[in-house]
Image 1 (cartoon, rainbow, N blue to C red):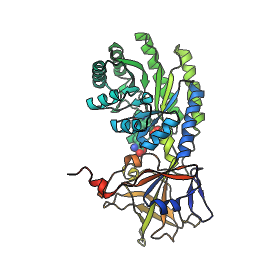
Image 2: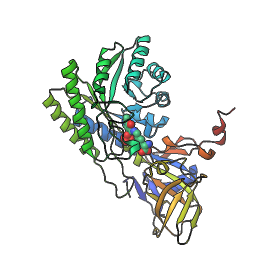
Image 3: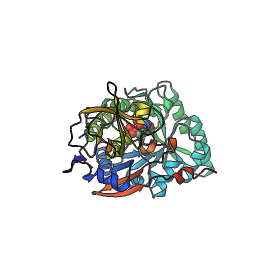
Image 4: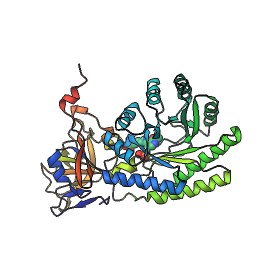
Length: 432
Ligand code: LLP
């Protein structure tokens, strides 16, 4: 099993956190997102304690809600003492609605509208991660109108290519995000921020990419950011108080993916950061990281009911399920790998190979290709796609007017509904 919260029970059924997934499918219907809340909490604690040990008591992980943003997860983040990275008023609204302390929210985005900025200021979001000059000037004006001095970080691009897929590589010089250090624009943005009365520059942010397995990428980013901080000290006498290193580590989608020791990696970054601060004569900043995927991905799986098993002799086989690219567009978008199994036939040998496809009217509606399946697979079976906790519910759509699935959280072996299944009436709610 790719993750230690998965097991198989005496009936040969797949279990998540000890709970029989076939029973869950019977009780709640399919497609169904299932999330292991205990695993989410465990990951939060791993990041919190590893970051405190590595960087000191002021370090704080910010959960990147873009990976999975819904009210109950913000409740978990509040209870676990996490900060959050928010990217839209929608995320701010959801977090605030369950009493998340907005002082621990960091607001991201390369194009925050005036309305976004006003909303975040009025909700007292703790920190803006400012992306560009227009945002900086607008924020300064709007904070001034409210008599506020808003804490900010500046988003910089350190010019690192993390060798991940294009859609998630964000730290390169030619990125749409942030100000480049290499071109001098980061220095100019810093000078501007320091000159404005209604923003208070706390430090700098960078994000090199997502699904990164290589600690080397963080070490390089850290080195470039601290050198920049030393330059700003020399140029303006400005001392960086916070350093945000962006998103978290990669996760295992396949058996062949490496397993990452998050705490050991953070320790390594901590040692390098302390040594470099000492040699540059900088105080150790309060470090932030923004893990999304590695907090929620392997806490989740998606259950589907099999509808057809089509064999085309000499060509290929298809298993069609009752969801697809609407609840998980990641294969269609990125050809992302996933492990798929037939949850009620875990003890049967997987003798055939099939594409597992969705129900949308589109041939690109594929969840995964070349999946080993038992030859007995049949209508009514339950298919499980593993490691779907990140960027699935968050990226779901209602294409073909397919309602979004329900989501169940497992806590101490007990399922509770976190998101109700969408109804057809929900789909028409805003239509006149
Ligand atoms: N912080 C920033 C500024 C980010 O841009 C991201 C991800 C994160 C944190 C969280 O990174 P994580 O820990 O989750 O790797 N939809 C794509 C992922 C796009 C992520 C973009 N930014 C996917 O499904 O793979």
